[in-house]
Image (cartoon, rainbow, N blue to C red; front, side):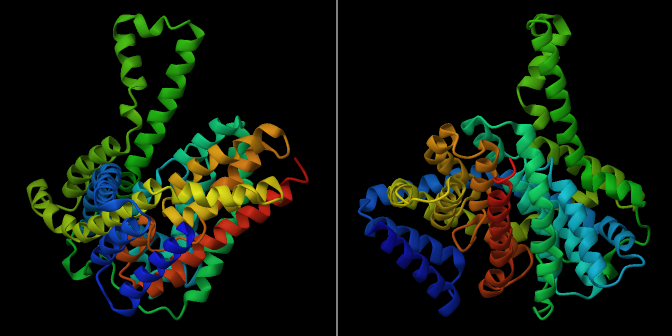
Length: 453
């Protein structure tokens, strides 16, 4: 019964949004409440789930999306995005642009959390699509496929790290196997799949800008790249410092943590402040304003006055994401996810396939890839402990399953749709298929590697 109600809720959501052209925010809230009542949660329980779902979702994304939107706006309006894009596009035609953005996405995606990398690359993707005269969805898929792969397969991203810890897997091996599987996944789901989107309509994204509004004086390529990647560099440096300080503390038996200024520094590192995405983005925004503003001869006060305009497109995106979080929380609190995994646990098949199926079922039901992966890990743990399959491959299979069939209850779906100005149908045709291709390649790769390791 819970599976049937969930299926009907998703179908109702698609009917409201695609068929009746309702706004996704209204449709998601209505369906979330309807699903909660149908699943027997009662009015009070349903509204509690809706409220907590909204708060929990926005609590982790609002600051990141807001600051990322401002940084993207600065990069676009100072001409830095044009400078970077011109360098990438120079001497390239058509498909070669897709390959370049795909490689950049993969390198940025390894150290950077998905949402941060997405909002940072968005203005570059939009500018590249305009320069190359290619459909925005086509260029976006080629670049964002890399971010999906790194988010689902590679440490230090949250899901792979948490799953590795749960299964007792070697993180180094997970990273190695993840890269081996990630490269073909990025190629097939990125530039190659993007070729099938040639006939997608030309759309305008949330951060599109007119070149006629660019300053007469453009920043240098070095400054443009530095400001665009500064949050990445800050997070990577913070992670490295955290690792080195942690190793030093262990080597001296914790003496460092009690020694004056060194103790304060160690405490600062251990607090996680240096590896916080919000702090990295805030620093990146401030430095970009000063550096790019100075090089493009735009006063910082003028850039500050544009922040409201840069944040405006995010209002609708955040509300849609919040409503999607409400729908997800209703399904979690109602016990629907537990019911589904109970059904799948009795399925007699290869442990890697079971891990993938459980994560995939949770992904389709809950929307969040991270939540699906972490929840699936607790269920698959007995398989990892049995020795029936490599724990490292089970980590990757779980991560791959958590990426499959992203649809209207996934915040990533709405990010892609709203940022790149697509309809729901166009997003299903591009984003959803791309995510599923990545997931299936991960599954096939894990099964293949299971005969070698």
